[in-house]
Image 1 (tube, helix red, strand yellow):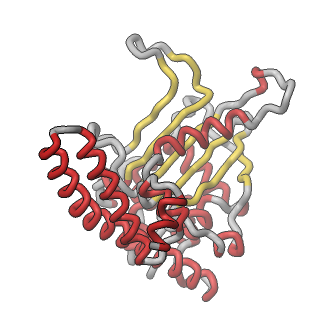
Image 2 (image 1 turned 90 degrees about the vertical axis):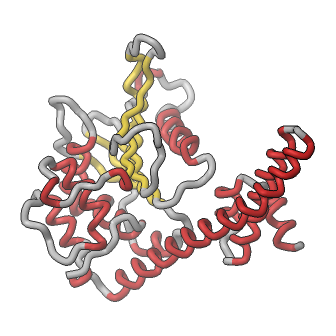
Image 3 (image 1 turned 30 degrees about the vertical axis):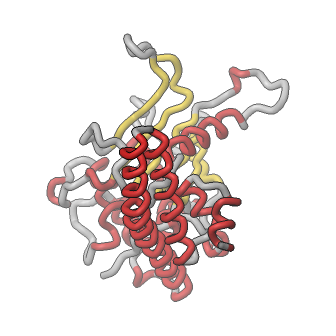
Length: 299
Protein backbone atom coordinates (compact mmCIF):
# COMPACT_ATOMS: atom_id res chain seq x y z
CA UNK A 1 0.00 0.00 0.00
CA UNK A 2 1.01 3.60 -0.62
CA UNK A 3 -0.55 6.63 1.03
CA UNK A 4 -0.44 10.35 0.27
CA UNK A 5 1.66 12.62 2.44
CA UNK A 6 -0.97 14.38 4.57
CA UNK A 7 1.37 17.33 5.14
CA UNK A 8 0.77 18.45 1.56
CA UNK A 9 -2.18 20.73 0.84
CA UNK A 10 -4.26 18.45 -1.36
CA UNK A 11 -4.13 15.43 0.96
CA UNK A 12 -4.63 17.56 4.10
CA UNK A 13 -7.69 19.29 2.67
CA UNK A 14 -9.07 16.01 1.30
CA UNK A 15 -8.86 14.35 4.73
CA UNK A 16 -9.94 17.19 7.03
CA UNK A 17 -11.93 19.47 4.72
CA UNK A 18 -14.49 17.07 3.29
CA UNK A 19 -18.17 17.52 4.18
CA UNK A 20 -18.77 13.83 3.58
CA UNK A 21 -16.14 12.85 6.14
CA UNK A 22 -16.63 15.45 8.84
CA UNK A 23 -16.57 12.67 11.47
CA UNK A 24 -12.80 12.57 10.84
CA UNK A 25 -12.40 16.28 11.63
CA UNK A 26 -14.63 15.93 14.72
CA UNK A 27 -12.47 13.07 16.02
CA UNK A 28 -9.26 15.01 15.36
CA UNK A 29 -10.44 18.22 17.06
CA UNK A 30 -11.84 16.36 20.09
CA UNK A 31 -8.47 14.63 20.46
CA UNK A 32 -6.34 17.79 20.24
CA UNK A 33 -8.45 20.58 21.75
CA UNK A 34 -9.55 20.55 25.39
CA UNK A 35 -13.28 21.22 25.30
CA UNK A 36 -13.80 19.93 28.84
CA UNK A 37 -16.97 17.87 29.12
CA UNK A 38 -18.45 19.44 25.98
CA UNK A 39 -17.03 17.38 23.14
CA UNK A 40 -17.86 18.29 19.54
CA UNK A 41 -20.79 16.31 18.23
CA UNK A 42 -21.33 18.19 14.99
CA UNK A 43 -19.75 21.00 12.95
CA UNK A 44 -19.97 22.79 9.63
CA UNK A 45 -16.95 22.75 7.32
CA UNK A 46 -16.52 26.13 5.65
CA UNK A 47 -15.11 26.24 2.10
CA UNK A 48 -14.60 22.47 1.65
CA UNK A 49 -11.88 21.14 -0.64
CA UNK A 50 -12.25 20.88 -4.39
CA UNK A 51 -9.71 19.94 -7.05
CA UNK A 52 -9.88 23.10 -9.25
CA UNK A 53 -9.23 25.33 -6.24
CA UNK A 54 -6.20 23.30 -5.20
CA UNK A 55 -4.77 23.37 -8.71
CA UNK A 56 -4.19 27.10 -8.41
CA UNK A 57 -2.44 26.99 -5.04
CA UNK A 58 1.06 28.46 -5.09
CA UNK A 59 1.88 28.45 -1.39
CA UNK A 60 3.18 25.93 1.12
CA UNK A 61 0.26 25.90 3.54
CA UNK A 62 -3.45 25.14 3.51
CA UNK A 63 -6.19 25.73 6.03
CA UNK A 64 -9.53 24.19 6.93
CA UNK A 65 -12.22 26.18 8.72
CA UNK A 66 -15.05 24.72 10.77
CA UNK A 67 -17.93 26.29 12.68
CA UNK A 68 -18.89 24.38 15.81
CA UNK A 69 -22.41 23.98 17.19
CA UNK A 70 -21.78 26.75 19.75
CA UNK A 71 -20.91 29.09 16.82
CA UNK A 72 -17.21 29.23 17.68
CA UNK A 73 -14.83 28.76 14.76
CA UNK A 74 -11.74 26.57 14.45
CA UNK A 75 -9.07 27.35 11.85
CA UNK A 76 -6.80 24.38 11.18
CA UNK A 77 -3.64 25.11 9.21
CA UNK A 78 -0.84 22.88 7.95
CA UNK A 79 2.44 24.76 7.38
CA UNK A 80 5.43 22.88 5.97
CA UNK A 81 7.96 25.73 5.69
CA UNK A 82 8.74 28.61 8.06
CA UNK A 83 8.89 32.18 6.82
CA UNK A 84 9.58 35.57 8.32
CA UNK A 85 6.52 36.94 10.09
CA UNK A 86 4.85 33.52 10.29
CA UNK A 87 3.96 33.86 13.99
CA UNK A 88 2.46 37.30 13.38
CA UNK A 89 0.44 35.99 10.44
CA UNK A 90 -1.14 33.31 12.63
CA UNK A 91 -2.11 35.88 15.27
CA UNK A 92 -3.34 38.34 12.63
CA UNK A 93 -5.45 35.68 10.94
CA UNK A 94 -7.07 34.69 14.25
CA UNK A 95 -7.75 38.33 15.19
CA UNK A 96 -9.14 39.04 11.71
CA UNK A 97 -11.54 36.10 11.87
CA UNK A 98 -12.59 37.26 15.34
CA UNK A 99 -13.26 40.88 14.35
CA UNK A 100 -14.98 40.08 11.04
CA UNK A 101 -17.88 38.46 12.88
CA UNK A 102 -19.43 41.86 13.59
CA UNK A 103 -21.03 44.31 11.23
CA UNK A 104 -21.21 48.01 12.02
CA UNK A 105 -23.47 48.57 15.02
CA UNK A 106 -23.44 44.95 16.22
CA UNK A 107 -23.04 44.29 19.94
CA UNK A 108 -19.67 42.93 21.12
CA UNK A 109 -21.34 40.16 23.09
CA UNK A 110 -22.23 38.58 19.75
CA UNK A 111 -18.56 37.71 19.18
CA UNK A 112 -17.81 33.98 19.28
CA UNK A 113 -14.51 32.29 20.16
CA UNK A 114 -11.81 31.62 17.56
CA UNK A 115 -9.37 28.71 17.89
CA UNK A 116 -6.36 28.73 15.57
CA UNK A 117 -4.85 25.24 15.42
CA UNK A 118 -1.59 25.25 13.47
CA UNK A 119 0.38 22.13 12.56
CA UNK A 120 3.98 22.85 11.55
CA UNK A 121 6.65 20.61 10.04
CA UNK A 122 9.45 22.56 11.75
CA UNK A 123 10.41 23.57 15.29
CA UNK A 124 8.88 26.84 16.50
CA UNK A 125 9.57 26.87 20.24
CA UNK A 126 13.09 25.68 20.98
CA UNK A 127 12.76 26.33 24.74
CA UNK A 128 10.31 23.45 25.23
CA UNK A 129 10.10 19.80 24.21
CA UNK A 130 6.30 19.87 24.21
CA UNK A 131 4.77 18.68 20.96
CA UNK A 132 1.57 20.69 21.52
CA UNK A 133 1.56 24.20 23.00
CA UNK A 134 -1.55 26.17 23.97
CA UNK A 135 -1.74 29.98 24.20
CA UNK A 136 -4.51 32.29 25.41
CA UNK A 137 -4.86 35.71 27.10
CA UNK A 138 -3.83 35.55 30.76
CA UNK A 139 -2.41 37.94 33.37
CA UNK A 140 1.39 37.99 33.17
CA UNK A 141 2.32 37.25 36.81
CA UNK A 142 -0.66 35.55 38.45
CA UNK A 143 -1.96 33.84 35.28
CA UNK A 144 -5.50 35.17 35.77
CA UNK A 145 -7.59 34.22 32.76
CA UNK A 146 -8.74 37.24 30.74
CA UNK A 147 -10.62 35.57 27.92
CA UNK A 148 -10.85 32.30 26.03
CA UNK A 149 -12.17 34.03 22.92
CA UNK A 150 -8.87 33.71 21.03
CA UNK A 151 -6.79 30.57 21.53
CA UNK A 152 -3.68 29.57 19.59
CA UNK A 153 -2.61 25.93 19.47
CA UNK A 154 0.54 24.66 17.79
CA UNK A 155 1.58 21.09 16.95
CA UNK A 156 5.29 20.75 16.10
CA UNK A 157 5.70 17.51 14.15
CA UNK A 158 9.52 17.24 14.41
CA UNK A 159 9.19 16.94 18.20
CA UNK A 160 6.92 13.91 17.92
CA UNK A 161 9.12 10.80 17.90
CA UNK A 162 6.81 7.99 19.04
CA UNK A 163 6.44 4.86 16.93
CA UNK A 164 3.00 3.37 16.41
CA UNK A 165 3.28 0.89 19.30
CA UNK A 166 4.05 3.77 21.69
CA UNK A 167 0.92 5.68 20.67
CA UNK A 168 -1.63 4.85 23.37
CA UNK A 169 -3.95 7.88 23.16
CA UNK A 170 -6.02 9.01 20.20
CA UNK A 171 -4.15 12.33 20.37
CA UNK A 172 -0.83 10.57 19.75
CA UNK A 173 -2.35 8.45 16.98
CA UNK A 174 -3.65 11.49 15.11
CA UNK A 175 -0.27 13.22 15.28
CA UNK A 176 1.42 10.00 14.19
CA UNK A 177 -0.96 9.81 11.23
CA UNK A 178 -0.25 13.36 10.07
CA UNK A 179 3.51 12.99 10.40
CA UNK A 180 3.91 9.47 8.98
CA UNK A 181 1.03 8.69 6.62
CA UNK A 182 3.17 9.27 3.53
CA UNK A 183 5.74 6.69 4.60
CA UNK A 184 3.38 3.90 5.72
CA UNK A 185 3.07 0.65 3.77
CA UNK A 186 0.04 -0.74 5.60
CA UNK A 187 -2.73 0.40 7.96
CA UNK A 188 -1.70 -0.28 11.59
CA UNK A 189 -4.22 -2.36 13.54
CA UNK A 190 -4.34 -0.25 16.70
CA UNK A 191 -5.71 2.89 15.05
CA UNK A 192 -9.17 4.27 15.80
CA UNK A 193 -11.83 3.93 13.12
CA UNK A 194 -11.71 7.58 12.06
CA UNK A 195 -7.95 7.43 11.53
CA UNK A 196 -8.28 4.17 9.61
CA UNK A 197 -10.92 5.89 7.48
CA UNK A 198 -8.54 8.82 6.91
CA UNK A 199 -5.87 6.41 5.68
CA UNK A 200 -8.33 4.84 3.28
CA UNK A 201 -9.04 8.32 1.89
CA UNK A 202 -5.34 8.90 1.14
CA UNK A 203 -4.71 5.34 -0.06
CA UNK A 204 -3.32 5.84 -3.57
CA UNK A 205 -5.24 2.79 -4.76
CA UNK A 206 -8.50 4.67 -4.13
CA UNK A 207 -7.52 7.81 -6.05
CA UNK A 208 -7.93 8.84 -9.66
CA UNK A 209 -5.01 9.63 -11.97
CA UNK A 210 -5.93 13.32 -11.77
CA UNK A 211 -5.83 13.28 -7.97
CA UNK A 212 -2.47 11.49 -7.93
CA UNK A 213 -1.03 13.95 -10.42
CA UNK A 214 -2.14 16.92 -8.34
CA UNK A 215 -0.69 15.41 -5.17
CA UNK A 216 2.65 14.54 -6.76
CA UNK A 217 2.98 18.01 -8.29
CA UNK A 218 2.21 19.65 -4.96
CA UNK A 219 4.75 17.49 -3.14
CA UNK A 220 7.36 18.24 -5.79
CA UNK A 221 6.60 21.97 -5.54
CA UNK A 222 7.07 21.96 -1.77
CA UNK A 223 10.30 19.96 -2.00
CA UNK A 224 11.68 22.42 -4.57
CA UNK A 225 10.79 25.40 -2.36
CA UNK A 226 12.34 23.73 0.66
CA UNK A 227 15.60 22.89 -1.11
CA UNK A 228 15.77 26.31 -2.77
CA UNK A 229 15.27 28.09 0.53
CA UNK A 230 17.87 25.95 2.30
CA UNK A 231 20.36 26.50 -0.50
CA UNK A 232 19.73 30.25 -0.55
CA UNK A 233 20.00 30.44 3.24
CA UNK A 234 23.36 28.68 3.30
CA UNK A 235 24.82 30.73 0.48
CA UNK A 236 23.31 34.01 1.60
CA UNK A 237 24.18 33.67 5.27
CA UNK A 238 27.70 32.54 4.49
CA UNK A 239 28.47 35.39 2.11
CA UNK A 240 26.44 38.15 3.70
CA UNK A 241 27.21 37.50 7.36
CA UNK A 242 30.92 37.00 6.78
CA UNK A 243 31.12 40.35 5.03
CA UNK A 244 28.95 41.98 7.68
CA UNK A 245 31.02 40.59 10.53
CA UNK A 246 34.19 41.90 8.93
CA UNK A 247 32.65 45.33 8.55
CA UNK A 248 31.25 45.24 12.07
CA UNK A 249 34.57 44.32 13.62
CA UNK A 250 36.39 46.86 11.54
CA UNK A 251 34.04 49.74 12.30
CA UNK A 252 33.13 48.62 15.80
CA UNK A 253 29.49 49.44 15.09
CA UNK A 254 26.21 47.55 15.07
CA UNK A 255 25.54 48.96 11.61
CA UNK A 256 28.05 46.52 10.20
CA UNK A 257 26.10 43.53 11.46
CA UNK A 258 22.84 45.00 10.21
CA UNK A 259 24.42 45.51 6.82
CA UNK A 260 25.57 41.89 6.89
CA UNK A 261 22.04 40.66 7.64
CA UNK A 262 20.73 42.79 4.79
CA UNK A 263 23.29 41.38 2.39
CA UNK A 264 22.46 37.86 3.56
CA UNK A 265 18.82 38.43 2.66
CA UNK A 266 19.83 39.86 -0.71
CA UNK A 267 21.98 36.81 -1.46
CA UNK A 268 19.13 34.56 -0.37
CA UNK A 269 16.76 36.42 -2.71
CA UNK A 270 19.20 36.08 -5.59
CA UNK A 271 19.34 32.33 -5.06
CA UNK A 272 15.55 32.09 -4.97
CA UNK A 273 15.29 34.15 -8.18
CA UNK A 274 17.67 31.74 -9.89
CA UNK A 275 15.26 28.95 -8.97
CA UNK A 276 12.37 30.95 -10.50
CA UNK A 277 10.48 31.30 -7.23
CA UNK A 278 7.57 33.83 -7.28
CA UNK A 279 8.36 37.37 -6.09
CA UNK A 280 5.58 37.13 -3.48
CA UNK A 281 7.20 34.07 -1.91
CA UNK A 282 10.67 35.67 -1.95
CA UNK A 283 9.19 38.73 -0.25
CA UNK A 284 7.67 36.50 2.44
CA UNK A 285 10.89 34.61 3.22
CA UNK A 286 13.38 37.49 3.02
CA UNK A 287 11.27 40.49 4.14
CA UNK A 288 12.71 42.47 1.22
CA UNK A 289 10.25 44.73 -0.58
CA UNK A 290 8.86 43.85 -4.01
CA UNK A 291 10.76 46.83 -5.45
CA UNK A 292 14.05 45.56 -3.98
CA UNK A 293 13.43 42.05 -5.36
CA UNK A 294 12.47 43.40 -8.80
CA UNK A 295 15.66 45.48 -8.92
CA UNK A 296 17.71 42.36 -8.15
CA UNK A 297 15.84 40.51 -10.88
CA UNK A 298 16.35 43.24 -13.43
CA UNK A 299 19.94 43.86 -12.34
